[in-house]
Structure formats: C-alpha cells, structure tokens
Amino acid sequence: MIIKTPAFNSRVNTLRKLSIILSLLFLVPAYLFAEESGIRDRLKEQSRIYRQQGMELQKRDDYSGANMFYQKAVELDPGYAAVYNDLGVMSEAEGFIDRAEQFYLMALKLDPKYLSPYSNLALIYEEKRDLPRAGFYWKKRWELGLESDPWTNKAKSRFFDLMLVAPAIKQAYIDEETLRLNKDAAAYLKIKKEEEKLDYQKFLKSANNLYRSGDYNKALEEVNKAQEISNSAEVIELRRSIIKKIAEKEKNLKIKEMEEHFKKGVTYYQYDNPQVAQEEFNKIKALATSPQKR
Image (cartoon, rainbow, N blue to C red; front, side, top):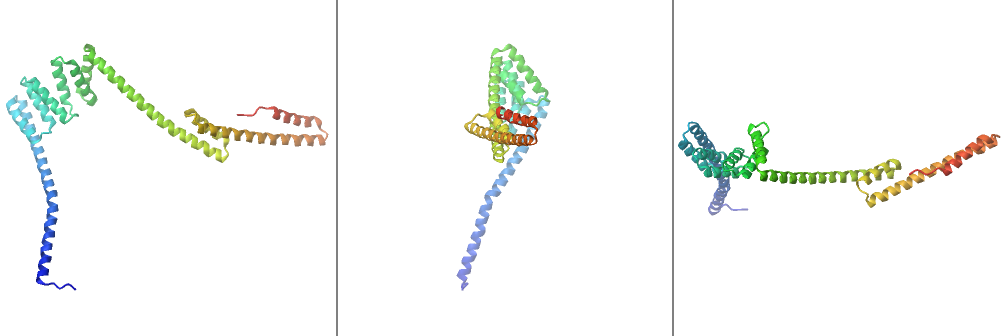
C-alpha cells in the first residue's frame, strides 16, 4: 500500500506538470508548421494581387509603376514564374532585350510547362538572327501547347518556316525524329516481344493440358502456334510426343477398322457371298497400305 505523504503528493503534481509541458512541446512544431504554411499562403495571395496591379498599370503604359508591383510580387513569391515573364515583357518594351531574355529563361527554369516564355524567347532569337535557338523554342512551344491554342499553330508554322531557311534546324529536326522513331520502334518491339512471350506461354500451357486430357489433335494445333513464336526444345519435345500419340491413336483405329472388315468378310464367306467378302478383304488391304497422317 502506497502512503500518500505531502512529499509524495508534491512529486506527483510535479510529474503531472512535466507531462503537460512535454505534451505542449510536441504540439509546438505542428503549430509552427501550420502557422508558417498559413503565412506562405498569404504571401502568395498578396503576390498575385501585386501582379494584377502591375498588369493594370502596364495596360496604361505606366512601365515604372508596373515594374514596381512586379518586383514586389517576386519578393513575396520568388518562385512565381509568370511574374518573371511579365518582367521580361516589360524589359523588352523598354528596349532591354538581354535582360528580357534572362527573365524569360528564369521563368522557364521555375516552371518548364509555362508556355509564354517559349514564344517570347523564340521571337527574341529571331530578332537576334539566332535561328537554331529560335527554332528550338518555337518547337517547344508547339509541342507543349494545346491544339486549340492559336499560338500552338503559330509556333508550329514558324518552326517549319525556319526549317526552310536554316539547314541546321532541318538537320536537327531530322536527327531528333530519327531518334524518336528508333525509340518508338524499340519500344514497339519490346512490347511485341513481351506479348509473344505471353502468347507462347499460353499456347504451350494449353497444348500440355490438351495432351494430358487426350485431345491430341487440338493439342497439336496449340503447340504449332507456340512453335511459330519459339522453336524451343520444350516445344519440339512436346510436339514429338503429341504426334506419336496421334500416330498410335490412328494405328489403333485402323487396326480396329481392319478387324471389323475381317469379321464382315468371314461372315459373308460363311453365308456363301464371296464377292462381298472379297470387297471387305480389299478394304483391309487398302487400309494396310494407306499412308499414316501427320
């Protein structure tokens, strides 16, 4: 029996307090994470508000004010790819082409699926007469875009126009398409090989089951299908066994048929009908000399 002295009660209360404190300590990281996540969401939301304000000022040709809001947007959300594209557009409008190029490249680095920088870069490189790079970005814009998007069709058209005047683009496209077709062919052959492997196993299993059940003719059909895929030793051996069983079965049937004709021939002789009896014996002779089926 535990005697609850004042000192004992004091220790119990201390332990209870420590337990509560430890529980709170475990809750703190989760609270801080939730709070941090909430702050990030609010910053992103404000970043999008700044971008919208920048776009409104850009429409009024207030480039200085637009730039200010775009800068604020990326300060709050450094991973906001669309704003870097906006900064690129603004830089182009102000005549800073190289700076615009860097903004577009940053936008793609942050989000390779964001489409606008591809066409913007393609236009810059056309302006710089760097046609291979222009072709590269037009092609990417065409490949990533939706068919219903007018810019997708424009990108495709520009790419093929550049192919006509830039042999390097044409050769690069031919090399890429050749590589793609080779990969497609290799993938197709791999799939076909896997399908054939499954078919081979299916036909072989079916042939074995039919062989064990005594249905030798159907077993031969299935093993022939397997042999068309792979003339393996396993198939050859099973086919040989099946043919042997078919031959034995045909032989037994032929012997039985010959016995029936013999009995009939003897019976006809006994009833003084030698002509019909001879016909039955001739049938036996025909069966004896007929080739065996394979």
